[in-house]
Length: 299
Image (tube, rainbow, N blue to C red):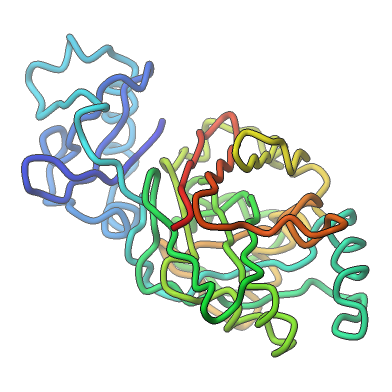
């Protein structure tokens, strides 16, 4: 099942896509509860609510006469979580091939890690499909892209054991970790170079966890102006999702709606010789086929 945040008839709504993705229905017209925010829905929706929505999603739009339903192309899809409750939790160099390209590019700035590399990415608002990314070229000309699988936490937990990790997952999305590399390298800590306004892009939906076998093995792909740049699979993660959830939650509470970006593979702009950084007018598409595509233009 694919859940979305969208804008229609002057209102912010949370919806479920039909199986063919041609229609989206406002979940507030299907289940009890005034759910107008995805994080609130993740926290308070019951198993029964999800079962009802799955049955609705399995039907075509023609069968949705009793609900508040829209043609998907007629609405504005937003990031499924436009306003995160906390900073995004990120994994650095979590694919071996990206680790090697980062070491080559950041020589003198980067030592090979012996443990998972965690950092936070500030996002006052997360962009969604079709939104324009405003590059801060006045601050840093080295603008880069990173396709990642995002894990959306479904319930609060601390000290979560490896074998229980999936119980705390609500679903998955596609994430573009937009980065300013010159600033990232200058400060060594990656927070500032990845935290400019509009440098987080998520969507086009949240795919509920029941749709993917666990551990998750999905392709992660990026293209710039149609040119394939990144192509890998999450089976290649150095630290997998159970490890990440168990380690992050050791002594730290994870909450419903928290977003964990699991890292990016090789093929980012800084990894080419010469580098292939983004410029104004470029179109970036990041994709996980089971979830969908995110396409954004650089301005």
